[in-house]
Length: 272
Image (cartoon, rainbow, N blue to C red; front, side, top):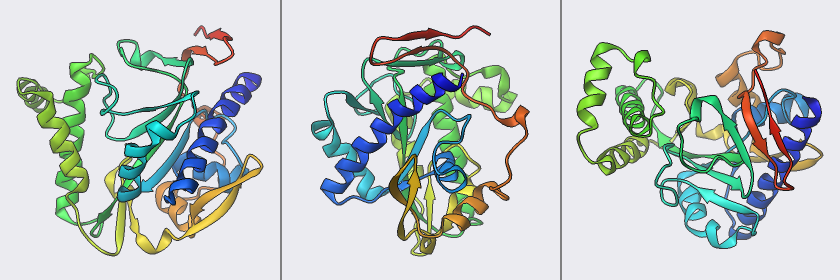
């Protein structure tokens, strides 16, 4: 498995390097994020059992990147988001490697591209994490995403409460564009000068952090320097608590792909 992970990591580093190049050319800000930031600080590279990459960008930079990147990306890469892929279901974008696949069981009904990827999360202004509006926005985002996933056969309705099932079923009657627009509005509806929030699947209170933590600094990741928050320690502690503590083996989980296809044509089928 380690050799397979090494090849996955090399493929994804190519995506990060291409994104870093474009951000440098356009003067855009990004930061290593989530498990990628944790890997940079704790391991100086990928978390050994992890197989994805995450970055985040301030909303203004994110929108400019989404607009301009498709024409600037090298031939091996593609932008994947709702504007380029009608099957897409996430409120954030991905950069993928063309002619690759990383297929997981949870997305067996997904008809869109499943190439090796890097997530790009937009960062929005926010008020304090205890502001009531953030809780409402978080619920709206969750509901809208559930509707969009249900339309693609990706939402397990058995996990929803009776109330949620009724709400989602009623929401599905209306055109999907309404829920994309509401989800976008919920992400950008907060305001404030002192905090930021970024749109991952974590509990929303973990995602609201003081803006002062997000000056630009550099950290080594797999032998090369990339941009990280100036107070990465505060960011990681806020999200993970004691982030330097290595989790036990049973919690060192991955996406458990069923099929991987690399750009060189190598195909790997993984049996349970």
